[in-house]
Amino acid sequence: MGNCKCDNPYLPYPATIKEVIDETVDVKSFQMVFDDPEVMESFKQQPGQVAQISIFGVGEATISITSSPTRKGILEFSVKKVGQLTAALHDLGPGSRVGVRGPYGNHFPYEIMKGRDLLFVGGGIGLAPLRSLIDFVLAGENRKEFGKVEIIYGARSVDDLCFKYDILDNWPKYDNTDVYVTIDRADMAWQGHVGFVPSYLEEVKPSPLNKYAITCGPPIMIKFVLQALNKMGFQDGQIITTLEMKMKCGIGKCGRCNIGSKFVCLDGPVFTLSQLKELPPEF
Amino acid sequence: MEKLFISRDSLKKLLDRLARNLNLVAPVKDPEGIIMFGPVADAGQVLLEYQNSTLPPKSFFFPQTERLFKFSYGQEGMALEDMCGSDKRVLFGVHPCDLKSILSLDPVFAGAYKDPYYINKRENSAIIGLACSNPSPGCFCATFGFGPDDGEGSDIMLTPSGKGFDADVLTDKGQEIVASYKDLFEKAGDSPRIAGETRLTVKKLDLTGIKELLDGNFELEYWNQVFEKCLGCGICTYVCPTCHCFDIYDSSKGGCDGERYRSWDSCMFTHFTMMAGGHNPRPSKKERVRNRFMHKLKYHIDRYGLAGCVGCGRCVKSCPVNIDIRRIISDLGEVSRNGQL
Ligand SMILES: Cc1cc2nc3c(=O)[nH]c(=O)nc-3n(C[C@H](O)[C@H](O)[C@H](O)COP(=O)(O)OP(=O)(O)OC[C@H]3O[C@@H](n4cnc5c(N)ncnc54)[C@H](O)[C@@H]3O)c2cc1C
Ligand code: SF4
Ligand code: SF4
Ligand code: FES
Image (tube, rainbow over all chains, first blue to last red):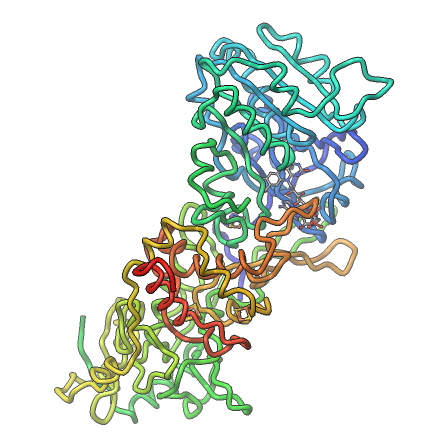
């Protein structure tokens, strides 16, 4: 059996970690660059897409590309340490070799969001996929194409807030952009809002007019955020979320990520609430 | 399509020559009496009449464990060696249900992302089909609109007739084989084909209303009556010719070198969908059993327009607690007609 020179979607492209940012106790962001500049050039992701990250000898994991496609020459992933691959990745530093294949999945439908206001609701590491779209919308000329941007973000504690530099410094500086941050439990070191994301959302009470709401977070948060949005008058077609299912291949072969007849890796991970309601409640 | 005939003697010769010139894979009986598809060196071993093999020939396109690539870290960075190549092969003696199952798998491995491991093996293989002269009592292929003499999916289809086999040459690949061994084939005679009668002996279940029932009802009280006795052993998916789920994992003896593999996996296992933090979208046997039958009777049809079950009866034979897809089909039919059992 020889080897052959065909396009093989299972082969990751070798990449090198350039920088590691400690986000929280168990979340780190990794900036990576493909070893082959041509691959870097031709890797064209859209906001909301994912990639498979390999550590050879350990395995692969599906991770959202958290950097916006407007940021050239680098891919960024924010990874929570939960098991084998993610723990091994947390042990790596700048200069370490990894593999990346992708981009996979559908993306946030920013085409239909143009001219509209946007509401982002995130919890914990769930901000990672939203961040690719937030930075895309805020970047340069793109900013003019979208209306007001509101970001509501929460985590268990101050220490669990990811991307503090964005939520506290970078994003609030943009025109017509409001950022609301909350933590679950009161903390001496925290002057801001205390409370769960869904109830903070109801307090902030953004108007549903001419707006898309995009949400991602722990399953329980998503559940209550969806209910709150509906209650506030958002229609199912205005609400967009990204789903997590266990994945292996990322390309519709291994059969692992199905919800009914859909494969999250091909048909998702981004769904509108109206699409979700068409699916069997198995996620 | 060319209609030819090959005598039993000539078929032996053909198999001998194929075994010598190409890799021949055919149904054989192992010392324990288990029927399996395997490489054969001696045409004498090949079964010309058999009831379905314990495992389908799927593994010759989608092996139970397959090496995807090798990796090594060196001075120059990372080197990957792709292992998707395949040798030429002739698969002999494939029954109609197994032929159909391969057609059901094809679109899974094709599509926007082509799976080179499967596709290369598929392209490098010729398939000689064989009609069943003695279908087993568990077979119910007729349910899915074909029968024990249906050649679709084969390159040459053999059907017992008179003192040999009628050979329908169905594709260019089939034509190539015939051209290379011209001396062994003759013009088809007019002896009747036996499979005309066996067709009638195969069970045909009524699928009317079932797809519609499942389309409209994810929750059905009926599933509560099915799942309890399931042991979650996964053998039903292991023997199924249309199941395609797999796991991907690395093997490395430490250091810099290693390999990435894939292996069959099963939606009947708890860990299959278990996620970080312990969230599992299919937490109990109920959801898993339902998923398997929904895949066979609905999901595969929705995605690919092809049945996810071909009526081979293997899962029926293997299930230690007699969960029987034929029973489930007839029960679901009943539910669709009467709203209940
Ligand atoms: C579309 C999508 C986007 C994702 N984006 C991110 C992201 O941006 N950042 C991030 O940190 N994580 C993300 N995940 C989750 C991430 O894929 C898993 O946490 C990771 O695969 C776990 O790998 P592991 O080897 O460390 O864990 P393992 O050692 O394999 O397992 C540890 C635990 O994690 C579970 N697990 C394994 N694989 C997955 C999986 N694919 N999804 C969920 N749980 C899994 C296991 O069942 C087990 O409970 C995403 C998942 C999906 C499907
Ligand atoms: S579900 Fe059972 S009968 Fe149907 S193809 Fe699979 S093993 Fe054969
Ligand atoms: S073979 Fe039977 S017991 Fe085993 S997982 Fe399948 S249905 Fe359950
Ligand atoms: S991850 Fe393999 S089918 Fe979706």
